Image (cartoon, rainbow, N blue to C red; front, side, top):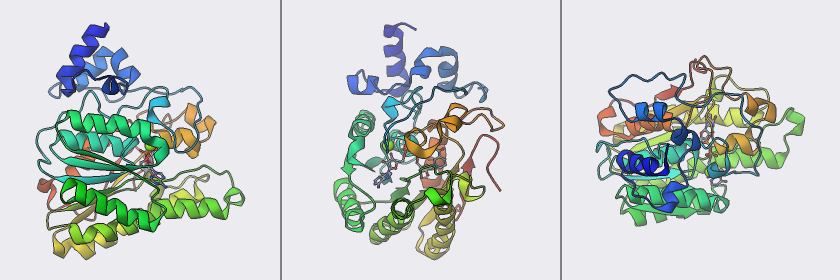
Length: 336
Ligand code: NAD
Ligand code: MG
């Protein structure tokens, strides 16, 4: 596809304009395969999910934790060129942790295009990814607020929520999505520092952000947590991570019961293997990475964009009876 065609398609699909910042986030394979992307822009057309996105084998690759989406090969698809909104979250105010990449970024792009203002949290090392997301939120005509910082710190979690509330002028969607995942062959290789970092990021942080957010959440608000297929079917090399995902599923169900009478819904998303920086920065072995997603019935990993509509659905007011639910997306495996 010529550069000119790419640019005009980009404008049509995303309404993004032609800023350089935005151009850098286009997934390479999306531009290369016009058949699959033109299909993804035409919701009235049938699309074969088995051939929409890359399949293994993948190139071995490794980045220092927490990794950058922009450095992955192929680049993940977060919906930059394809997600189209229809006003489902008009005027809503969302805070998404881990909003710089992966599922959090896909949710941030979708939320903005559905009419929400969005604050994202991420680690300072992820500034480059975060900048692209803020540019995409702004290109959708919404407020985009970047709040970098380490969620393992309770004081930061409180400040994060305060800054988001101040910047957005309120809060009615909280997405607890950030997580730490590091593969360790044996429990003997999991240090106390490892264990502590995983628990702090994946369990304590959502506890702290939820507590800080609750006084601001009016009836109709939604809390969404990213859990995992690991909650039900843990891998042997993810001893600490997998148990945090079971805990996440559990807190979704507990909190949903606690908050139902206040009109606040709490739900979870349980992804299967998804092509994100978490996997290439210590989350998976090189061996697993090369064949990533190949063991699913779909024969490929999911892309973050494929879960965007689930985050939208769980936040939207028309999902008013859904609380305490966990929605999966795992290419045919993974669920109970
Ligand atoms: P990702 O690397 O894009 O996102 C994880 C984010 O967590 C990072 O971008 C980072 O900003 C954030 N983070 C980690 N430690 C942090 C800290 N101490 N302080 C602040 N932020 C921190 O990867 P992803 O796969 O999109 O992960 C998003 C969620 O999806 C996680 O909850 C993960 O457990 C879950 N998940 C992923 C997969 C998968 O295969 N990728 C499968 C199931 C569940
Ligand atoms: Mg990231």
